[in-house]
Amino acid sequence: MPSRWEPLSKASRRMPPRQRAAHLIARGFEIMIVACLTIMGILVFGNVVLRYAFNSGIAISEELSRLLFVWLIFMGAVLASARRIHIGFDTLQRAVGPRVRRALVVFTGALILVGCGIFIVGGWRQTSINLGNTYPVLGISYAWLYGTALVFGVALIFPVCNNIRRALAGIDDGLTEDLADRIESLAERIEDEPGHPPAPTGRGAADSKEDRP
Image 1 (cartoon, helix red, strand yellow):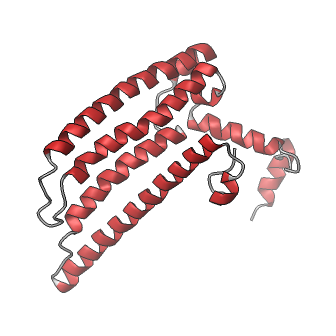
Image 2 (image 1 turned 30 degrees about the vertical axis):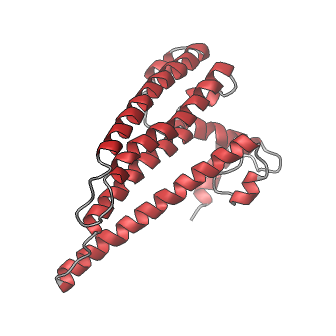
């Protein structure tokens, strides 16, 4: 699997079409999250400076920052689900075997899909109700706020269904590993690659630490 920090064109050429589409969508979410965070920082910092230094301010700062923050949170939640980096408790998973672990992945995935349905229905209703209501300063519809729940519910279905599919097929044991375990597994695979120098062990590892400045 290519590193997430590789250039997009280089990484995409080595992927099958479905994985390439998922990679492009994830990269799009990353770009939008960074854009939201950047705009929020500029608006909030600029508003503070203008208010205290020039007794002025940016009129749309509060409303736009709040709207961008909501979108940032929901997009980040979808991306974290796709990367499988949400915080979780693995006490039960560690106490059972691989088959039960995969069954737990399917069970929790089914519960999340129910939650997605609730978000979709509720988001659609709230978006429809508030379609004619507008922000006092921004002047845009409140549907841009409540539409986040609808987008979140639809977008989250895809990574959850993919995790369920992999668990049922038994093709991805990493689904039952937490983030620390996956990092250790990835480090071991990198060390096993041809041309990669082996990690120092024993006295050699201690000597290498002592030689560091």
